Length: 251
Image (cartoon, rainbow, N blue to C red; front, side, top):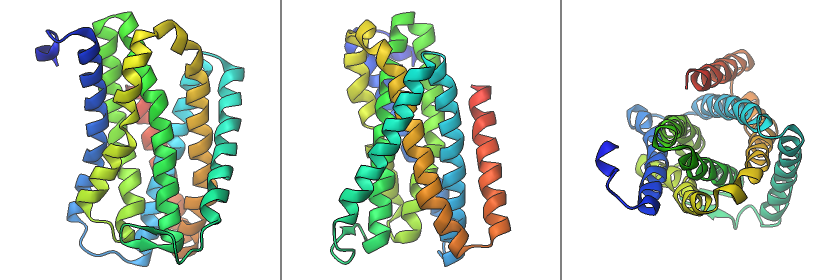
């Protein structure tokens, strides 16, 4: 990233945040090597996605509480209410009419919900990148690299839900990147109005955590337990949570 130092400040912020968005697409790469998709593969993919999202939620709560505990809790409540509202809106459509890529009905609804959750989550990450530039280039680079690395398993989580339902790996990578586009879009205004955006960080982090955790408990895990062996689903989910938490601690 040193070669980018000569860019104007706003352009530099945008490019840094764009890198974090593009990194999300890397999460689809492992799925190029998965040839067959069975019902159990769907179950275990959902288990891994659930673990990654739950682990990320814990990290978001931890980060948000450092900026404001009550604000983080309030954001989490709003996140849960947002998912309930989104489920109601998507549920108003006839399952045979709802189409997303190669999927229809319930599968299409679940993929749309996953993308909505991850896209909303990206807003807070974009704000984090923009705000970090207020602390200098060293801090900004550290935060950008950390979020970019963190986004790779998010891409895995998105692809793990979409790929078993007939979406090509290339399109999974594309949708993963699309879900992170709020990061460059939010980073620039956050950089320009850093003091105004700082108070919103715990709300945004809590919102993302609440939305993701609620989706894990209501959408991903129930389907995983229904289609796969309970012990394996529990094992994969637990290992994914621990891996994500340790991964964030290392960063």
